[in-house]
Image 1 (cartoon, helix red, strand yellow):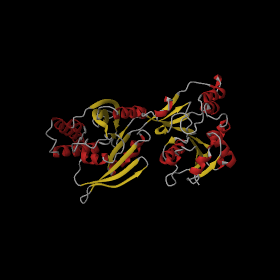
Image 2: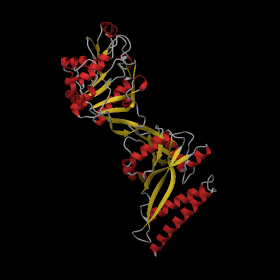
Image 3: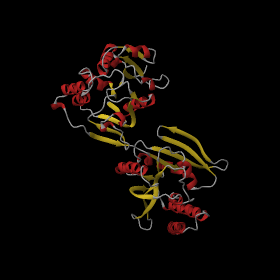
Image 4: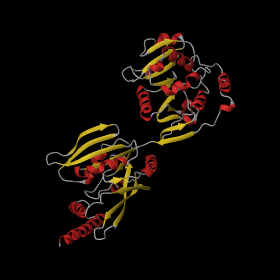
Length: 458
C-alpha cells in the first residue's frame, strides 16, 4: 500500500479519470461521490469509491476520521473534481514534499478561470513561500493535517480555510510554480453548482473570517528556477578536482560529466548513464581536440541554458542567485550567450610568495542550441559560432575562479608546452590574429617556467 493518499469529492462532471490511472499513480485514491448519479458512473473506477452527500472538506474530514486514514498515510492531497492535472504531476508533488520536507504545498494554477494572481505560475521560480493559498489541489503532511483537520467542517465552501490554517500553524504555504494545474470550470458553474448564488459563499467567508483574523496575502520567499546544465569534461589526472567543482555549483543544477580517454580503436561518446540530475559518459579520442570533446559533452545537456566549466574551476556561492537569474534572463532574451570573467592565479617561482594574475573574458553561458559549436583545438571558443550564425552575446558579472595554475613549476611548464603544440598544429585557426596571440603567450609562459627549471639544475 502506498503512504500517499488522494481524496476527491466527485460530482457527475468530475475529471478525476485524467489522473486516476492505475498504472501511472504512486498513490491511493478515495473517490467520494456527492450525488448518486456520479456514484453510479464512477463506482468501478480505480481506488475506493463511496457515496456520501456533502461538501469537499467536510466529507474528507469524515472519511479520514471514520477510516483512521491518518494512521495509514504520511501525505494527503485534497483535490477538486474539476482540477485538470496528471498522475505524473501528482507523483512529483508528493516526491517534492518528501525531498524538501514541505508541510503544505499547492501547485500553481493557470489563470484562465482563477483570478487570484498570487497562485498564477511564476515562470522564474521553482516555488514560492506564501501566507495564503488556494485549496483546490492542496497537499499536506500527516503532521500538518493533525493541526488543521478540526477546521475542515467550519463551513461548506472552504472559503477562509487558508487564513485559518496559516493563523493556527504559522507554517507558510508552498506554491510550486514548476507544476501547474487548471480549473476545469469557471467558479460555481457547471452541473449542480455548489451555490445557486455566490453571495452565500461570501457570507460564509465573512462569518468564518472576522476582521481580526484577516491579513494581507504576501509572498514570503522563493527559490529561483534552475535552467542550467553544467557541462564538464575531465581526464583521470584531473578527477581530483571534481568534488570541489561540483560542490561550488548551484543546487539542483544538471551536471553533465564526461571523462575523456585516449583510445586508438574507438572514438566518441560511450557508457552514457543518468542518475537524477547527473549525466555521466566517457568520450574516447585518437587525437585530442578540446572543441570536439566539449561539443560531445554539450550534446548530452537537456536544459535550455548551458554553463561550460572545467573540473579545476570554481564558482562562488554568493553568486548562485545571480547565476540562476542570469540564466533566466538569457532564456527570454534575444542574446545567444553571456560573457564572464575567468580569474587564474599562477605562482611565480622566481619571486616566492608572489602570483601572476590573469583575467580572461569568455562566453561560457549560452543557449542550448545545436547550431552553436565549440571551435578551436586549443583555447577553444563558442563566440565564433555565434557570430557565424548572426547571433549576439551580452556581458555579465559572473566570475569563475580557475585553480588549475596553482601547481608546481614543472606541471605548469608541461601544461604550456602541450597547449603550444596544440595551437601550432591547429591548421584551421592558427593564422587568425587572436590565435597568433595565444601562440605568443603560451611560448612566453613555457619559456619562463622552462628557464627557471633549467636554472634549478645548475
